[in-house]
Image (tube, rainbow, N blue to C red):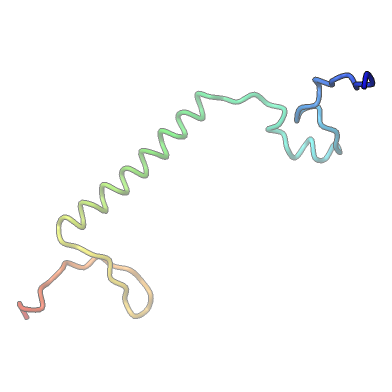
Length: 85
């Protein structure tokens, strides 16, 4: 019962054993996180997604929809009523 092994606190990912090739390929394990760059990247991705959503909503609000041609390409077509033709 008294044969406890001492706890090794140097057992995280940077102290993990492995080949030198693994350590070179996985360089992000040994670098610090750049939180400013991460924040800017997340803000840019959210901005792009918001803009795409806005443009799509605007086209739908104007009465356009996505139609597929016979050759497989997509195009925006204005909605027309079958009663008008």
